[in-house]
Image (tube, rainbow, N blue to C red; front, top):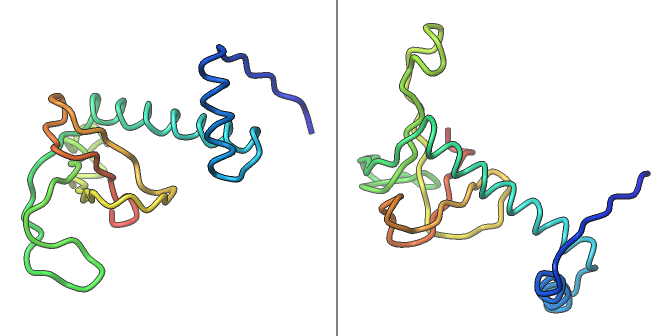
Length: 126
């Protein structure tokens, strides 16, 4: 196993130490989790900006374990993004419930997204 060096400023280090103590985790695990969260956040912004739009979608009547009624969704496409072999638009519902699942991509609420609350793309429901 190799060694990885991460350089951070004093304020970031202090924040990571506080987070690791609060979580009862090692500093290495906390730094790793923070790096993963940042990677996921950057990915979400890239996807939202390049080939996706947030729409209010009617998912219909409630069914246990599935999204229902009107809710925001990430609409991936248009189809030419994926080529002629995939003539479909992919819709991934959003939830405001944070579940810390690896398949949930966080999208922050701001004027660019139009969301009122931080939401999570439920990629497992694609």
